[in-house]
Image (cartoon, rainbow, N blue to C red):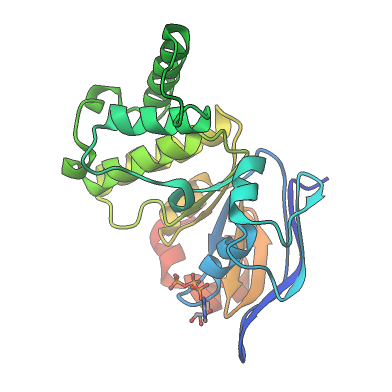
Length: 254
Ligand SMILES: Nc1ncnc2c1ncn2[C@@H]1O[C@H](COP(=O)(O)OP(=O)(O)OP(=O)(O)O)[C@@H](O)[C@H]1O
């Protein structure tokens, strides 16, 4: 059984057919990249999966349950987390404080006037665990607003993790990052998938990253699904080459 399944999904905005006849199956534990030129429909696809708006055609299921018309908040509770959706990075707070607020919120503690010492210790342990996973421990006392863009996005991922995602949707996770930050984020994505077992769908323009880490790649073009397959299959697909990859493939020498 597919973990995430889209059956003939389409989305119209008035006269514009932004997505048409999209059928995708993602297995549990998969690391799936979604690629395509600007306007191909990648963000629209994420909006549909995360419940921002429903498809105008077709159906979506997750973990065997239909989710076609389920609200974003209900989907978060079911484990579908899109980074910005729950990302409330407080720029004036430290990394530690941001993670602590996220953990307290996830544990339903935010409205409690008083938290026991045992619960406080539990929160602290969880914050330290998250910091360790995202490799931010040395920067826990830094004010988030004073950190680099790359570090801020890593903190966002840490906050997303506090909600125990089963399916994590990352929209251009390395956009605007330098080499070192890109490497950190790419390594984080891979570890979340391989070590934490989180199924991940990510939109990415950097083909070296896509071909380097994705188990499978879905290629969208002009609202339709052009191809789906492993890196080797996609790089050998003539339709993909002519529609999108072209020189990018030669440059990464896949
Ligand atoms: N809410 C909306 N209302 C109207 N049109 C929309 C809406 N969202 C997306 N579109 C249109 O749907 C098409 C697909 O857009 P989408 O943002 O999904 O593409 P994309 O692949 O994410 O592009 P990019 O790589 O530039 O982010 C575009 O023509 C866009 O203008």
